[in-house]
Length: 235
Length: 182
Image (cartoon, rainbow over all chains, first blue to last red; front, top):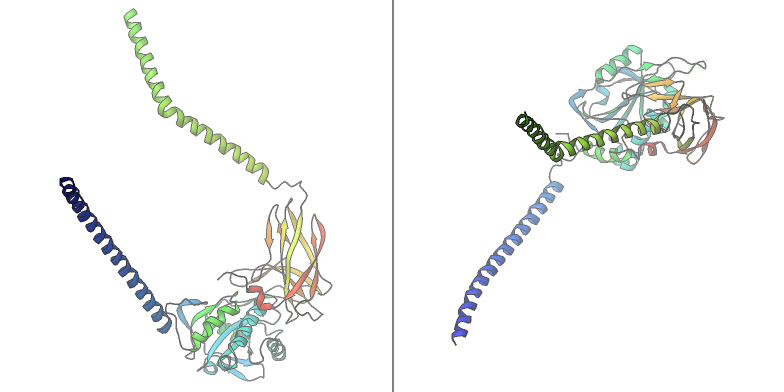
């Protein structure tokens, strides 16, 4: 009996101790479960807010400009011979502007093809709201018909412009890009033209907050263009 | 004298013993480590110099891979490829193609300004990549209509390796930037 009592006391003591341990363990488990549930809830809410709310934190494929660029008030000539004022005739439309020349082997065709295939992928409803303006900085070779034929190989809706050396200079300075340089003429009369390779995305208000460098892929465009069309702006 | 000697002897001997003991315990291993490291550095430097030196006498071993061209849209066409040289240094001095009036190496700098270069160095052990937006071979006066899947033969003339011919695959223009990061 004594031993039993003793054992009982011991057991009671042990039980008490283990009871405390168990309740501590249970509390800890409850705490862990509560934390886990809270974490899941927070994550879920966060995801929902991220999905449904403004996606301002989502990164842009293009390069966000430190200060916005405004379309310059410069009038060039389009491929049908009509005057085209960069500022006035782009107002109200999302406009992708780039400089180039039709004899360009590397940068221009890749830029135009990637953008063109992205627009194709977006479908006519959305792509018809985006205007692509290609300014040839090589008026010596790029007559209206040459530019038209060239652009038609990418998209017949692409607008081709060129102008006098002075107007082209004003256009490039207005957008804030390096002025194109004509290279040395080779034995066969060919010369190359160094020019800015980035494409500027102007909003309907005529201001660009993002530029797309050479190397922008079709997938980059299809990610950013709908956001630009929806009026989303970089923070 | 004897005392003095003993004292002197004991002193220096004891001192030197202590010092050598200290040296063995602390300075000794360190100086050995330093010597070993120094030796390794010297050996490594010599080995690197010997192995890595562009031996002007070694024959170049150039292979050309990943040759591709965008679809033709104007009269010019860019060809991109990789020149791998597992031998001594060489230089690309000329290029040509039966499909073009002229082929020239062009470099494009960060702001997209193209620079013509008459020669292109292919250093010993180097991979020289001609990539979109960078250096490329520009084909002028491309007469033939080229579609995706066609090949454009490119003849490369090296200073030491002589002539190497490669077929560039015509690929969709937009695919040329697809594998770029970002």
